[in-house]
Amino acid sequence: MRENFSHDEPALIPIDIGHGAYTAIVEPDTAFWSLVLKERLAETLADEAFVGEVRKHAKSFAAEMDLLRFGLVPSAVYFNPTERCNLNCTYCYLPEQMRRHGVRMSEDRIFDALSTLLDFFRRTLPNGVRPQVIFHGAEPMLERNAIFAAIDRFADEIVFGVQTNGTLLDSEAIEFLTSRRISLGLSLDGPFSEVTDRTRRTHSGHGIHEQVVKVLEALRGYRNHAVICTLTTENLAHLGELVGLFHNLEVPTCMLNPVRCTLPGGQRVRPSDDDLALAYLGALERTEELYNETGRKLVVANFANVVLAVVAPTARRLMCDISPCGAARCFFAVDANGDLFPCSEFIGLSGFKGGNLFTGGVEGCFETDAFRSVTSRRVETIERCRDCAIRHFCGAPCPAEAHEIHGDLAQQGAYCRFYEEQLRFALRLVADGREDAYLPDGWDDATSTVFEIALNS
Ligand code: SF4
Ligand code: SF4
Image (tube, rainbow, N blue to C red; front, side, top):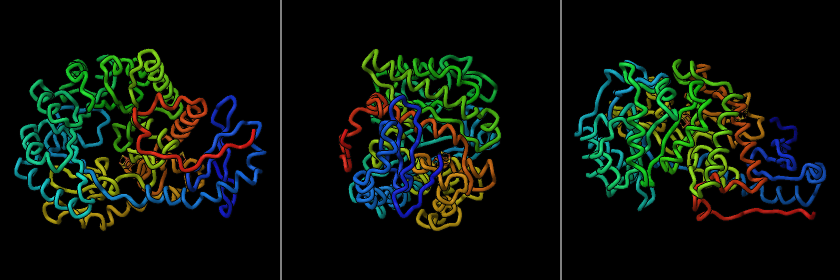
């Protein structure tokens, strides 16, 4: 998807979205888009009224995009209380030695760290806004007593979440977490154990599928949980069945995330872009069918974010498909030593350590070369992406992945063609008025239409 217009005028780029009747026109700098009937494309591009309207609104569109890209301040932390994990997933971004024998943070250190983070957020967030802390992995439930104590100690000031592999959630833990409305993220990669266990298993090689499904059964009816599925060569053929399982279990939200290629384990199970797009779009369509059959949505959050990028750009919630991405801009990560990284994906990559919470506090990390190298990575400076018409719907993810694949942040990450197909699909849904089936209920409560133009038919 290449531009062929000068930037003095809005660069209106036609994009074939694979729809029978409509083509999209995108203005790359501002992510303005419009759908036009194919037979009226040339006429629309030459229509002074249309181009004039786009020109008139260009500044406000650009300001909106700039705010999203450069105006946000960090409000969340991915907090790793331990380097250890009871699982040995083949694609994990944390080195295996670390997961087996890594350091653990004591309860006192966790309390100290949260106090330091809270001081930082009190200085940087508007009054009344509570920061989010997501206990993350490795496997945070290995430090269950400490994190539960921390949740109770800081509940009034911090919004907590727990991202866990799910295998250590017994009924007591579920009761503790759900009674406090903690947001829970679990992981499951397949609809049955033969698939899940190909990538997610214990250090001794045992499968964990049934255990996680039992936990999801126990969470049925709890609205504040989600399941992450990592898409690899090992499970693409079963994604339809997998979303069927999630839907049966009344999981409200899932994420279908292509495996990150930050370590060789991830690169070994990396699917081709075409296989990935085919399986992923098939699974999305299956969620729509299930919604139509039952009236109950299973929202695929990473795709909903792309649909939001189209229909309500400022309502985007995840920050992997915008450039600069959310790393060190909207959130950052703390490892079990208190070391600060732009995002969990960078943990273990020593060149991206921006300081230590216990010895230097938080503020300074944003000024370090390590953090600045990530926050200054812009899609416009990446050779293969700078002229891409959909660069603000994709963001050339992901810097950690680009660094590990190419040894250079100023390169494209993985899955370029996949991201193109994903956006085409989102635009097709909008053309057919089907997008609501893919968005969380109430997504438009806080949005307003700032620009709408209908040409004379
Ligand atoms: S694109 Fe990569 S580095 Fe950026 S927020 Fe997403 S996972 Fe983290
Ligand atoms: S990676 Fe994204 S921004 Fe870069 S060329 Fe591909 S679709 Fe465009």
